[in-house]
Image 1 (cartoon, rainbow, N blue to C red):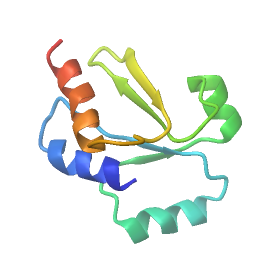
Image 2 (cartoon, one colour):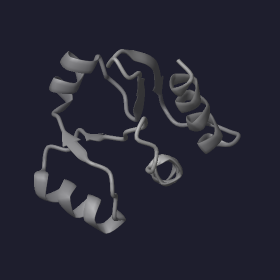
Image 3 (cartoon, rainbow, N blue to C red):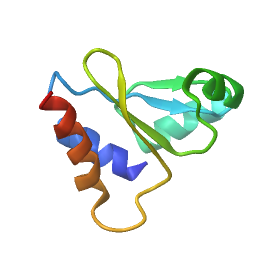
Image 4 (cartoon, helix red, strand yellow):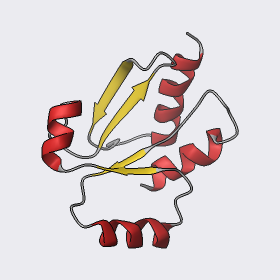
Length: 100
């Protein structure tokens, strides 16, 4: 999550870029505590694993979607960045979508 927080801080002033965290946590109270402790400024949606699998075809976490202005998923990345500058990788995807 620190990666997403850093990317959010970089782009939060850009009206063309939005971040939404999606949690698969079944316990709303635990999720609220987690979000509050980490002071996430972005919105958080909650789905069950079954809902996420059905709606987004997500079976593993973390999964990151990069969605264009029309609402089309252009990139889907499952897992974490194993090496290199992960914030730069997230920025690359965002810049690709902004240039469309």
